[in-house]
Amino acid sequence: MAEWEKQIFAVNLIVGDLERSKTFYREVFGLAPLDEEEDLAIFRFGDTYVALRHDPSHLAVPADEYLRLAQKGVGQFAIVVEDVDAVHGELKAYGVTVINGPADRDWGMRTLSFADPGGYTWGIAQDLPSAAGS
View 1 (cartoon, one colour):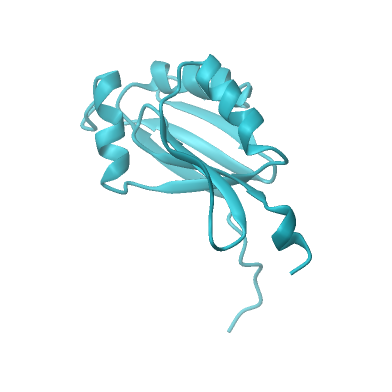
View 2 (tube, one colour):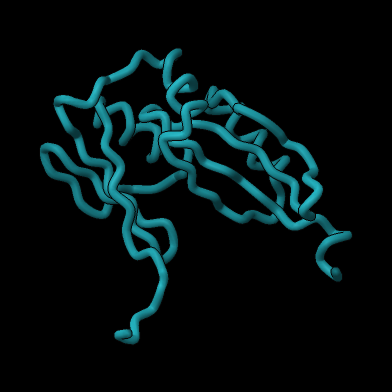
């Protein structure tokens, strides 16, 4: 087998409303696109690039229906933070609907999740102090 690093470098997300998705990623994550084209916007999350690609055949769902897509499991990504509750406050300030959490989990993390306008779910997690020394 060839030697290669098993680390995700980039993720492509198909979206129905590119402008709404770009605005969401700019505002909620505080990121500026690295590149923008007519049907593409690329954002960088640390070492991972997230490309939002518009596909005219992908349904542009109304804002109140993207949670339904997220509940079907179209995809989930996770970000580790120092303070889930602080992020929760920021999400509320942007009017983002939280799907679940913040909640302490049996596996030693405090988490919450929300969906972007394309229905992709984002998880926010922090290690619980009791789990740090385990």
